[in-house]
Amino acid sequence: MFEFRRGSLSEQIVEVMQKRIQDGEYAVGEKLPSEHVLIGEFGVSRTVVREAIANLRASGLVVARQGVGVFVQPHSQPQSFRIEGADLAAVNEAVSVLELRIALEVETAALAAARREQPHLDAMKEAMMTMASAISRGEDSIQADLSFHRAIAEATGNQHFLKLFNYLGELLIPRTKLRTFELTGQSLQNYLDRVNREHEQIYSAIEQRDGESARGAMRLHLIGSKERLQRGTATPAE
Image 1 (cartoon, rainbow, N blue to C red):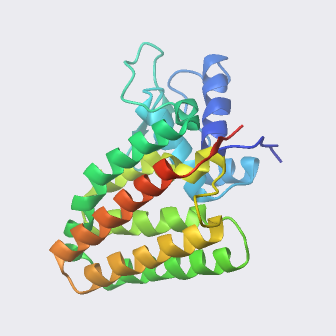
Image 2: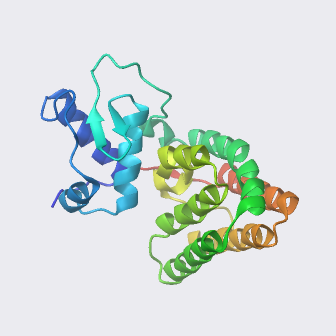
């Protein structure tokens, strides 16, 4: 099985796939291995593989053909918008991404409140429960956090919100880029408990189809995360 170093799994998979494309292991016009094959090779979740493929697509290296697969593009393909993972090592860059989230996810929450169906609510609730369980055991809760926000994007019924979310992936959670996250006056566990309580407020507003409250709860959640990050101290991830 592939051996990962410390850091984002999806970014490391992107590095491997980029090198394979550059070295001609995956030739121009060739179809990439299926999700199932990549999951087996790298030993990661489907979510991580999809985030890696989304990054490759955003870079213009590959293109998806509906119902067929993902294919290598000519190297002259123009580069699309991309946030380099290394840029997020510093706290100020993590804050910049939170500002992007505020612009994007506040309206996402309002649309989700108007359009959500029961399966979306179920997915949000499951993500919150998974996150709470992980926090209580002192385990990694990042994927559960991502799942909660992804379920909100899905609930909009607008595929472009979901595609953008999947592209940004782990970049949306500041602590994925920070090795330590000891905030002034509170432990990481207390911080994450508070984050999940804020998730509950967002969920409640979406469940009640209250768009304005959903906007407000999401705005408070993300602004709070930004302010807590700015007040705290952190060491860049290796």
